Length: 124
Image (spheres, rainbow, N blue to C red):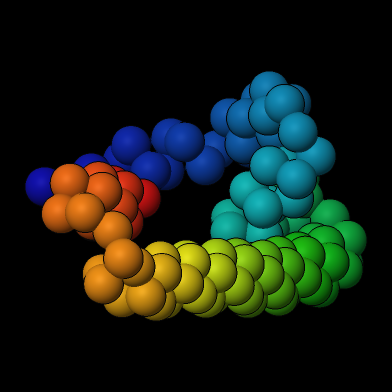
C-alpha cells in the first residue's frame, strides 16, 4: 500500500535539505530539485527551501543535457552500425575470394588438399 505519511516525512524541509546536502553530484541535486518541484506549487517549493526560479533554469539545462545525451547515443549507434557493416562486407568479400579459389583449384588439387581448403574456409 502507498504510504503517504512516509512521503510527507521525506519531503519535510529539513529532510529535503539533508538529502540535497548529501547528494554527491551537482547533476543529482539538480535532477532531485526538478523532480521534487514538478508536482508542487511555487509556494510549496519555496517552503522546502528551493529557489523556484533557479530550478526553472536548471530544468532547461537538464533537458538540454538529456537531449545532447540522446543525440550522442544515436551518433554512437550509427558509428557502430557503420563499422559492423564494413566488417561484414569485408568478411563476405573474404568468403567470396576463398570460394573462388576453391572452385579454381578443384581441377588441379588432390582431394586432401581440397578438403583442407574447405575446412579452412569453414573455420574462418
